[in-house]
Length: 551
Image 1 (cartoon, rainbow, N blue to C red):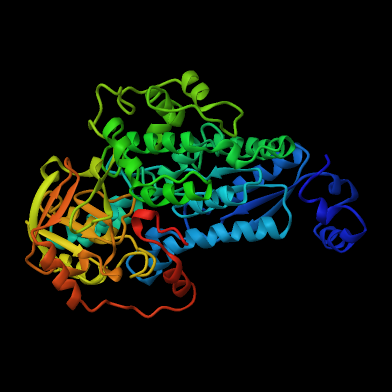
Image 2: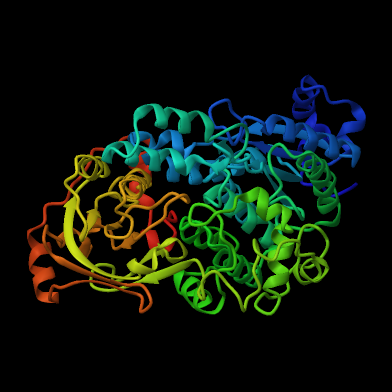
């Protein structure tokens, strides 16, 4: 094979020093005529969604070698949002997306790789690697690591979300700590990303929809043998992509992002997709914004009932036919686009089989008439905010309540746990946005405890932070502009009446523009001291409705 990117470190007199160092890696003469393939490996022994990725990487390596390539594995960070939650670690989670993207760029470009495979799983790793793929635009594909099995308790499925809600039950006295311990020990039975349609699994499905992973990768479980088969085939496929010169921007285009948002709306994916899809699309040179989410949400119904809002888990979605079956359901809404499979999206949809009519309902019999996410605007969020409407009780679709304002997640959580939040309240958590926190942490603990305390249909929550993919209830995030930028959310005071109207996409305080302006003039911004990567991030990050993208 000639005219490879890696020729600069393989061939010619001037490449002798590089060849010498590569021989120390074990390369032989014959290897210098083969394509060099990087493998971005997010394996670690901290994140349960990643503890098995070493096996997947081995399968990818095997496929690369069989196809005539030379694999080179390098590491990237991976943060478990569940472990990082509730302390300063959560301020590093979204930041890690940009760090991961940069790591991939540094390693692939620094070593003149001909192509690369991203082996990812949990929340920020997949979007970070996709951003790098679009930015570098050299042959690439993704292998997502797969979901864990659901836990079992008394014959019923439980998951990570169950643990948080059990905390709420303890707080109100409907359960004791021994019950909490039982749930804690049963909810997460082994390797893989959390078993519901939380952020990791949503992004895995959307990666397959974008055409950047092989068919079946998005929903196959971590413990499923077919995951290793997909990984090996992915290794073979990346060598073929390199030989044919097929690059990510040859695969992913504006039609691809339209399809990804359609699938997102249909399955009721995590609100974090409203951060990740815009950021990824910018790196691919075909930016989409939240208006596209809301437009498609009004057109594409919600046809699944997966956790956290429903009863099913990723195993059920996989058994129902996975992403191809979803595409088949949406065939009148999707647009044709290429994939790394060599087949088009429409070809995959047409050949798919839908194996469970309840897990994947027909469009004329959906779980909800509109898609999973809605974009709300008003005098609290002039630029927009995001809610997972598929996870909202019908009783909360139109809601008015009294503001209870907190300048940190910690203070809000303590107030909720102590019983100071009651029916009719709207918990406002601010200074948790991309710049303010910084890092836009998830407000999963307060929303889950609200649910566990039985307040899920009578208490709403508004924040300039974001939410876990496991969040359900009247939780509105990504409020922009954020409080740190003196957005209107900074002007709210205890007792202000707030009106939430999801069907009409409205989020307003009963305050005049003049009153908001006068209050903002008096606001003293909460300015948390930052160092290191947080300091850099605060200087460069945009607001939540722009995907917290770095400019």
